[in-house]
Length: 364
Image (cartoon, rainbow, N blue to C red):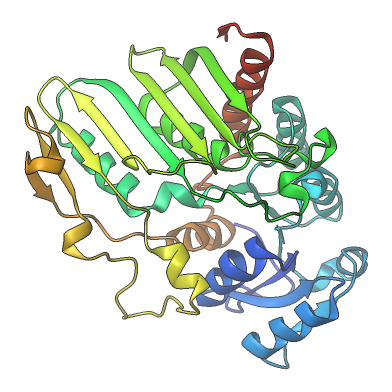
């Protein structure tokens, strides 16, 4: 159990570094909604974003222009959350750990598996929590699929297809679309971090990786259309797609087994809800989707022509991540996503990058 200067009954004080998409849409609202956590400080050098944060979370929220301000008063904080651009994840997480503070880092935790393992070793050496925000483990479709697998409804799984596809023919700009390797941009490391993590959680380590990665849109400098094929140690084959150039979206999940298949269209509703200003509130329904969006389980006929039976989607549960972080710090509960798990996913992402570059399959 982590002791804090505020005492065991006081909320754990969180310093959030970064208030762009990740910080403002995901981390800040989820931290604020978690019993036992309080959003103490938001770090952003943008005065408009500082004002935006205070407008939502009250005048009691402190803002800072630089993470150095957090390290200077580390004794007043209990957790650092790093939601800044990818290139800053390793140096900021390192600084937080060296300041004696537990850390949550948005995915990808690092640009390489070696860096992730070095961070994990530092956290272990200091006896501090280092957790990685892989919120898509709490998507409704992923939770529903895990239940189906646990109950044996699909039999032995042969093939797992997972898609994060979008139709964004125009560039949005920013570091995520930069071709500078130091930025760790592109869809392979952005959405690819999600689909690879999910595949490894469901079906275990990968032994072989093949990938195709393209830059499709005029003016783009980073991959915007990538396919990854994994062979898992247990024999399952995963086909993973991440794209910004898909004019007709495929199913979010298509899972084929010896007894039945599960097909699910559409994304989990939680991101859209958070973007729209909705917030998780204790006792209020959260993460549910309309019955018309449920996936289908069956065999033979396509679900698009009525095949299979509707499978109720479990509610999405992003708040569960920070609830687990709070429990890990308070009661010594399990880390919801370890840096070593993230390093295993980075092994796959690095292999995928080599495969796409050299046109070969990579053995892990």
